Structures are given as structure tokens and as C-alpha cells.
Length: 314
Image 1 (cartoon, one colour):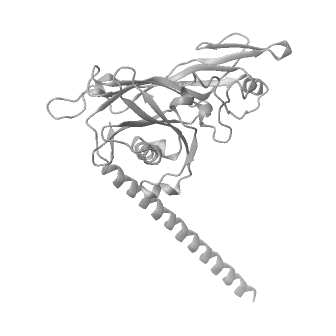
Image 2 (cartoon, rainbow, N blue to C red):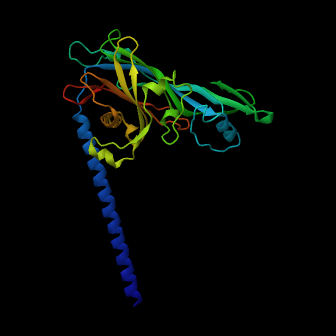
Image 3 (cartoon, rainbow, N blue to C red):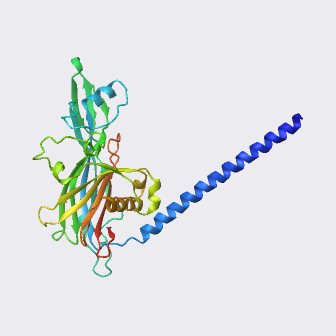
């Protein structure tokens, strides 16, 4: 009887292992199928003959409350609010930047390819600036930002707070439409959206809509991913008279590669851009907003075609 029980127990273990193996295989097949579907969708994406150039600074920040928590070795929650909603002082400094040179606006005359001086990858650089601080009597903070150690002070990095820079889209420096942008983490709070400091002068209040959580559906396989927090903005060019429909969003799994990031941006544009017309310019800037010691921005741009598609600007 005891031997029979041992045989039954072993048999049950084998069946469990078989079920687990089939489950793992099933997940692998689903993942491989999803990646293949995304790959085919990306390969079918049309390519615009426009180019893009930009320099965008990634700024990090900490509030006084964050610094006090770090001073006693606690890990704060990095959420940012406007002064009207959070009276804690905010310390902001530039930690890095992402650049695409103006050579990327041009094509080679012989084959229509991008200029040989346009790199395949954007240039990403980090400064050595960090926040040095000490807590004085009465909990007053002594703050300094430096790329060199400051005597008798603790040091910390910040959380991604803001992107500021300039974007050019076109076929030459003179003929491109240039757009100045400033995006910050405060505006991506869905549950507690920011209150404008002055509704008459706050540019974000007029040019952008409130953030919402968007489920991606194009291609449909993206529906398995969690919703993306995003807000659409209409950015006007100061000289050309053209506008850029720009989606400011919280980055996620699709931002690990350039091509999946472009698919994710296109899906957001299909969800958020109202009635695009041929020749309209659009794009996305995402980031791990509120992420500690993170400066990685995800950037992509498109031109809407007469056939009703978004052509990627490479």
C-alpha cells in the first residue's frame, strides 16, 4: 500500500510538471506571436521623406520634503504637484539631454537616404550635476547643485521632472518648422490634475488637454498592455505657422527599443489626434516621469499621409 502511494505521488508530480511545461510553452508561443505581429506592423509602416532634429534637456527635481526624507535614509514617493497643491519648495536641475543633429534634416542627393552625418542613434549625454545638501538647525536645508563634491554635505540624484528643448521637422534648417517645448511631470497626474498658476498666462492650460489613461489598440495586440497615461498638446511654430500635435506620456514596456516606441507612439496618435489632415506633423515624448535617477526620454515623430496613415520620420 505504501509503495502504491509513492507511485501515485510520483505520478501526480509528473502530471503537474507536464502542465507547467505546457503552460510555459503556451506563454512563449503567445509572446513570440505578439512580437512577430508587432514586427510585421512596424515593417509595414510608411516612412516620411522629412527629417527631424532636436535637442531636449532632461531635468530632474526634488522637493524639500523629498530631501528631508532622504536625509534620514527613507525612500520617498516621487510625485510632483504645483505650488498651489504642494507648498514644499522644489529644486530643479538639468541632469542629461538627448540630441539629434541638424544633419538629420537632409537627404543624400543620389539615393534619397538620410545624410551620412546623421547617426543611427540619438546622442544621449549626462551631466555630473547632483544635489548636495545638509540639514541645518530648525530643519532648514542648505542646498547646492554641483558636479564636484561639496564639503560636509550629503549627495543625491533627483527624479525625472521636466523636458525642455527645441524640435525641428523638415528637409533643411531654413525650411524646417521649429517648435519649442516644455513638458513636466505635474501634468501627468490623472487623479489630482494641476491647477494653473494663472489660467490667462499658463501656456500648458491652453495648448494641452488634461492627462487620461489610454488603452492602445493599433495593432490590436497592444491591448494586452496596461493603459498609458498621456496628454495631447498642440504646439505652434513661431515662424513657419505650422503646428505639431505632441503627446506627452508616461513610458512603459514599449519604450525599450526605438521601433516598439514608434509603434506605441503611433497607437497613441490614433487614439488622441482628432481628424488629422495630410501633411500634419505629430509626435510623442515619453519618459519615466517621477522615476528616481532616470533621464531616458523616448522621442518619435510622424507625418500624416494622404492615404490616412502615420509615416514615421526617421
